[in-house]
Image 1 (tube, rainbow, N blue to C red):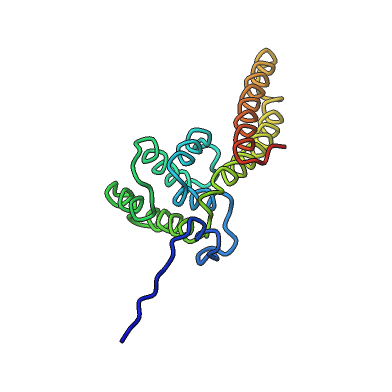
Image 2 (cartoon, one colour):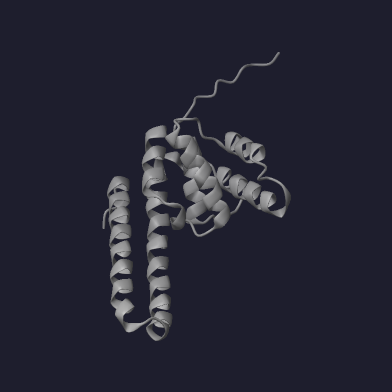
Length: 181
């Protein structure tokens, strides 16, 4: 005779699970993983603040783009549904497909907590903010000798405006996550 074991559901189950995929997942992997387990309103907020350019890894960008499409269309989001979207779109073939599949698997097994999605988003946008400054420094160094003088200030002003907008997004995300600096 077998006895039934009652399993109590827990909203925090994912935060107690150790990662079984990548053992030190990046902020991008954790963001995608948390989006898989977050509530729809937080998911929609994150995909509004985070842009494709905030993600450095092109495979993460692809998966994030699918999550964004589903979130904006108020459709369910989970690893199986995203894998199905990738399969139907013919994106799981070859080496590229294997890398996309691994990205999705790493995110799903990252033990990312859905309730921490805003914090992961702030971390990703913060890393992107620093990359933006690094790239700007490199570009300014290169352009200082190749761009006509009358275009230098305009380039710097545009880049500064983009940095200011990025900073505003980052501040908003940090405030939403409770980690305002």
